[in-house]
Length: 111
Ligand SMILES: [Zn+2]
Ligand SMILES: [Zn+2]
Image 1 (cartoon, rainbow, N blue to C red):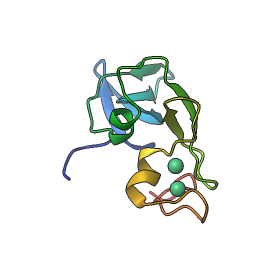
Image 2: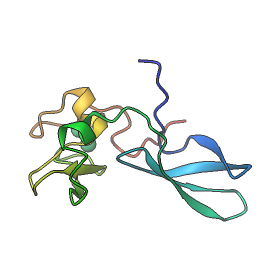
Image 3: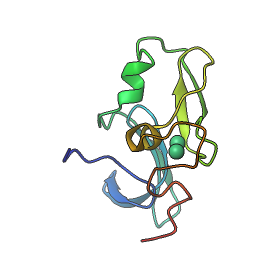
């Protein structure tokens, strides 16, 4: 449970620059922005992503969709056009019907 999973607002070093994560995508991909205004897409972080496994990562055409949780605006991976939940919601045990259980689901305005 100590594996580092990137979250929006975290800082990470990319190409020697300290960059802020502005978007977290499934499959170990994040979009970051450096203070100088450059933005990068970082892939292959390799953090555990249960959703990818569940959605059969081998099927590369698996589409991104909005999280099935009604309060959540994260991106989830959908295997075959079915509703899918993002990692946060899956881990938090959201059922896709009642309100979101994931911490930071409302945009994480906290520090
Ligand atoms: Zn979600
Ligand atoms: Zn949720």
